[in-house]
Length: 399
Image (tube, rainbow, N blue to C red; front, side):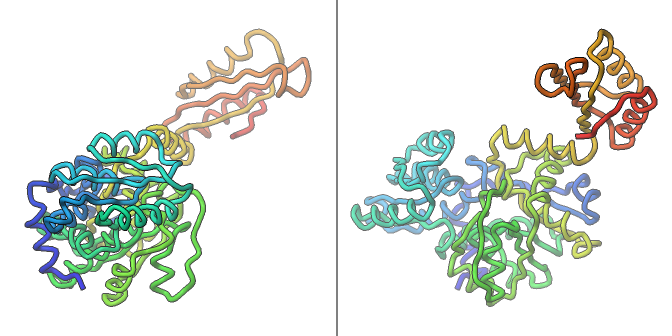
């Protein structure tokens, strides 16, 4: 089993190859969730995610024969780039098997680190099977993303850095996919400072580790913005370690992950992917559990698609009442749009989008459907705008 000694050895082994990222207090996040919060910014790694820790340590442990033969890994995301980068730094040939659906940007970035990328299979499981087959046929060493002692020990270096840089921390909240990060952190903390309470976090569509720990059958699936922790088959080594240590895994809804991404972007000025915001999502979902605590949580990845990030932020503005979508059926005559816009402006709103439909949406040929997107300070100002329009005899439907 992995322990503090193995994690300390990994820390020494990867020093200089992996960035020691800052652990910083975030007053904005703390105010929003009701406790003191420190963020471990592993989104600042060269590949944008914590996966470099485990990959660098595992590759450093290869024998001379294994280095000469090369390595193979399976991943559709951060592990692929981590293995590719550190193999390149060590002069080791790397093959990465990625599913056919992998976005071209991820393929390009992985190839940019010098790896040979093979696209195979529709699902991750098919890509994994092919990677294992390549390892046998070509004599390559398979680098597992989480079910490997060297990888687990490397990931655990994150916890060492967090408690060294912020000794005030009394609670750690760690996202869980396959379990390597949580297992490595838990193994280190259990010996280094057992008074620090550690929790894992999974998104509600993929609670595989929580189900395994509870002795339940694993049932997962569905779309999620936290694709980095959308794992069906957790690692057996992480599972055994977490079971032995009695680590609790919390479940968070999809909406909380989106809220976490938005809070980090607006409040902490930090870009996080869905998996990277899962820790903050847990603080938002379980505030009573963390009230009065001094919590450390990693932003363990920042590789989020720009369009997805934009959509998350806009959805949060709508939820917060800072974007208002109003629909009107108005008479088709000059000056109506101008009058509505003036009343909105007088109430302090800012119209940012207009859809004016005469042919398809309107109930009669004498009317037109108008849809407006309005920027407001908060829901109170939005309600004031609706009241002002209603007072002018406009019939408004809120979107």
